[in-house]
Amino acid sequence: MRRYESVWVVNGDLPDEEVKATIDKFTKIIAGHGGKLVSLAEWGRRKLAYKIQGTLRGYYVIADFAGQPATVKELERNYRIDDRIIRYLTVKKADRVDLAALEAEAAAKAQAPAPLAAPAEEAPVEADTGEIQAESMTAEPAEPGPEAAEEKEA
Image (cartoon, rainbow, N blue to C red):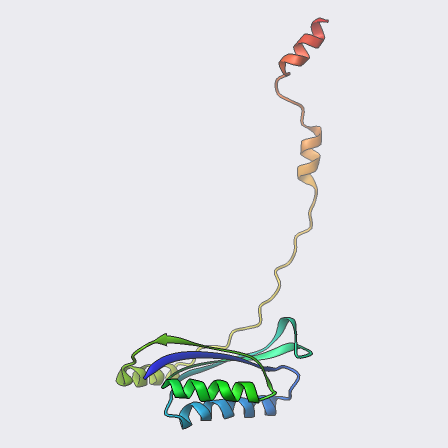
């Protein structure tokens, strides 16, 4: 078995029940094709950088699992078919997986679930006070240049 991580974005305009049904569908595909789900993280609804299929919001889901290449092939085939999925990406994390260690890791993650990532808050923008400009306008040169000395003599 190989270890994979799959991220998919569900259309954010869908109701919560339909989003949960979509997540269940893809976790069942992983389990149904001999895969072992290690963790499932739901990042929730987030604003997209640009419109994808006419929507500006998406519900992000990340699945960490072990499986065969056929599992990934079937998973991605279903991503393409399902209209509720607007983007997806699956990457291979490791070529070989020790199943005993994988099950221990899955059990540890199940007992101590990680908190969901909170939506990123925008940092407050500080107003430009213009103090730097005022200082540079009132500052006088410390030493007059050689040209200034010649002008005084003439």
